[in-house]
Length: 115
Picture 1 (cartoon, rainbow, N blue to C red):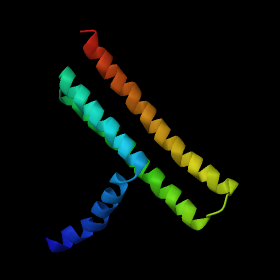
Picture 2 (picture 1 turned 45 degrees about the horizontal axis):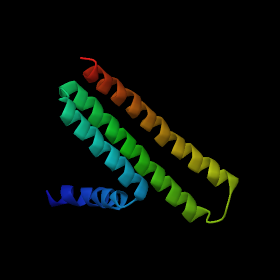
Picture 3 (picture 1 turned 30 degrees about the vertical axis):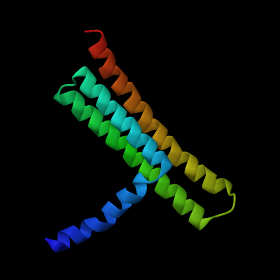
């Protein structure tokens, strides 16, 4: 059992580090807001499943984006167009996940409001 716990220690450390990152904290705030909206509107099981999955997707994308940015800054601390391209691609992934979450979340909310 200790070996299993030991394997999770780096992952838990990574989550703790991520929680202190401004961009990740903002996404966590949006996830909490989505949860409060879900409670207020009385989301059903499948709606919660979608909201939780999409929130996790966005937060995961943001954590990966942060890791990529930090790695790029470590590898090349000076301005470099290639590094900028890598960072822009990672940021684009976050935007893609965020837009998907916003659209699906909006569809769920609208469904409740027109009932």
